[in-house]
Image 1: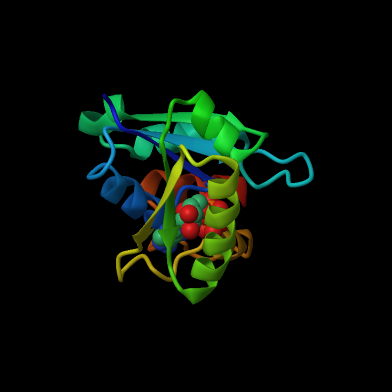
Image 2: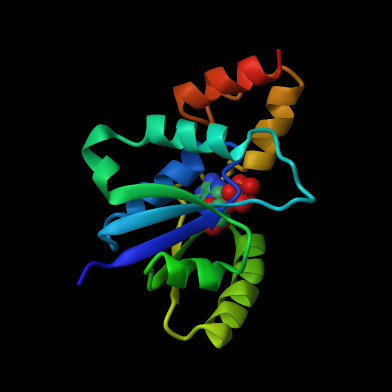
Length: 161
Ligand code: ADP
């Protein structure tokens, strides 16, 4: 049976940190469904369609059959079940991530024991990267190109011109 992992987040925009976890995740899952959370209270910098298009451009062609992108507004565990995923993939950067992620993993596990949270540690080079800081840098016309794939850096420039 295929092992499917759901990788939930905002991905606003997709960073080198997200890419690192995605590529690591392919070592433990046959397929990864990237689930972009859309909350009406948080508009974000990029629309769902823009975020999805950027991710599609960043994913290497050879891996594209194993990766898909969806949006979600409901509970992560329900989204995982709907996608047929038994793994919930999350990246860990530091102790702050760990504290928050442990709470979510505990509560998600209590709601859905059939969906297992798997934490993957960020690689040293991408560990400091957060999408929030990337957006702040770009909105102040800074150069975020060390933190995001090239197509995302170009999109950030256009968006903040
Ligand atoms: P951010 O926290 O950067 O706004 P998201 O909410 O989109 O990102 O996070 C989606 C998932 O990606 C989370 O599990 C988060 O911990 C993980 N992630 C984000 N950036 C990194 C990074 N630099 N290294 C490892 N994991 C990351």
